Length: 461
Image (cartoon, rainbow, N blue to C red; front, side, top):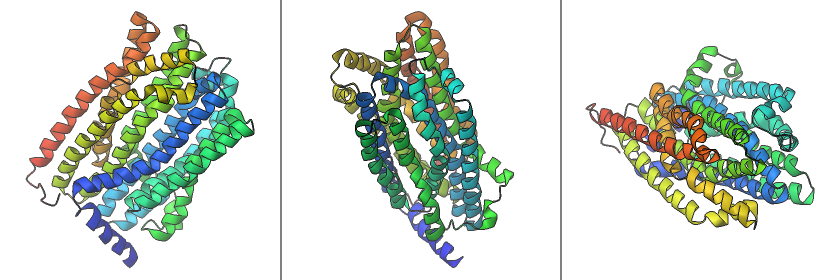
């Protein structure tokens, strides 16, 4: 217990004493460093699949992508929720309560994810067909899904452990847990696709290895942090599970909405006369190029979350207010700069996936310049949702989480293609991004004003 108290005292000097701006960038950059190598894995995966398997491989990625986002959704539901509650408890010096939450949510996240894997494997053909797989794409997608589903429980539980490593003030170790598997999986995927002829099976195995090896953070946390779980901590407690998942619902909703969006687009492409080429174009943009923005956005979300939660628990409203100002403003600038770079180097980026096929290259670029035009603005709604989760304002978190896709994009997808055909599918996203951005800005401005008007604006910021 004395060791645990010492660790918490060290955390106090970090979360409640250091200047907000460098603290925000420290946690965001550590998050980005780890996620960057996972991004490289995804990016190289697209390159290897595009050049080693071809258009059917890229089309199958578009079909199976909802499972990527479902995995992220479960991580947000279990990991963001539980780590937020645990961080607030640490801010209140409740070490035992934080440790108990960690133990119960690790075991629950693994068991729940394993159940999903078993069910999906049992109905794999029907599931992939429902997601929009044509007869040509179906067997290729199945090759990927089998190894992916086997590793799925380890991926979810390991990433939950990664989030607890960050609130234990071990961001460097968390980064290493992403970096080392990511680098190794790139080389392994190259060998499996180009040397050993394993096709999409090789791609699935590489993804599993890249994402699931964070499971080894569990013994590290047991030795080196306050999260030294006891056997009693592993017994499921439905009240704790309910408390944590309630906090994680908004980010869960964001990723489920993304899955719904992807499924709808894949099916609309078929309905409006599209071919596997159009599905492949959407797969390249939605799974790989948009992942650039997702990586940057999630890094900022992870930079905000532990700082906001800890200071919220310590009732340091002034530091929370400054975090909103610094975090949202500076992350928005970076996202706009990212858009500029992606558009400027669009030819070179697209060529990595499609090679030197000029017709395919031009088709991807045309869609990308429409679909991703205001994507950076739309991602601000996700940052707003992450902040509201961190301070337990679940209603606002859910609202900002679902506006972009469920409230705006899905209705537009049902209207615009009737007017513009397939082009209407691509026009729905930028329209939704603009509307979601306006909602997020209004909510954050109101929150900032409320924090600065409470009369307890702390000087230490």
